[in-house]
Length: 400
Ligand code: AMP
Image (tube, rainbow, N blue to C red; front, side, top):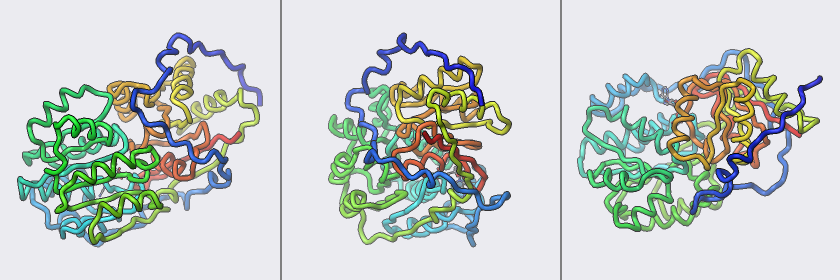
């Protein structure tokens, strides 16, 4: 196959943009440097028509939740709980600490939000702190909270890095009953005496495996050490390894462990590789793919912030609606890019692993791993952006 000659890209103009990470930013986890077996990236989705395999025997309407919350859940379009919700919600309502083993895309956000909103609505003294690895995830959780807690007189404040701190400090003055944030900024504000962790009786650690990967383990342990002893603790992670166990030990008390079947998401996704024999032709192969029918909403993953920015720019040069999301963009730029992609105003979003963790975007048709992921865990997280909620998705991994 003959591919057009590669253009040379002028990225010198914005070199300073890529020069350094934000001060204090965590380094991306790079795995052990070994190449993954490419067979891991090949798998047919089971059958043409993909259905959610789990069917709950209950409906949200059956739960012991206040009526207003039930109405909000219904207006949000949820009728039956997903597997993780089915397993977690009764336990949280019973006051238990929970360890939920679940990937993103399984519906775990609603599992903890609905139950904690119910608790805070019934008892105005109850406050919840939700700690997550990325800014996007914190924003997403806050958005979902506002839908579930509509007209219930409950508020949430998002505490994330990369945006103005004084506004967050102001928002905290209004004594919100929910705070969702990333470990670094939470620690900062606690250090400044603007946030008091001992006033939260409900704590959620979400995507703990990722927080550990991102180097947040010390921060999390520190935050846990400041929490009140008497609390309800919810822990969510796709995997539990030695390091996550370390966090668990100091966090939960007599917990119930539940898991949603891991493979469910992957079974919905047709996975294949694209052999790259000539590295220079990589971008042309990507362009060809993007011009094929059906590649309507495509997430492209790569290793570095710089290369993903460059890739998005060169796609735009060739007339493809694309932008990049990565840690060197301001929080506002990241939010804007995400919103455009969500609203189908972009065909392609190029992303690094850290920036994309936990993103909940409807209808992603394809995930393309422009650079192979560093670990299988990263792979699962990347491709989990497509084929969500029982829909079929496609994942292609470029293999050099
Ligand atoms: P999460 O794993 O929390 O990121 O959720 C994944 C996706 O599933 C999101 O788009 C949710 O809006 C959607 N979702 C979660 N629970 C339900 C449910 N019970 N019914 C329908 N959609 C849901």
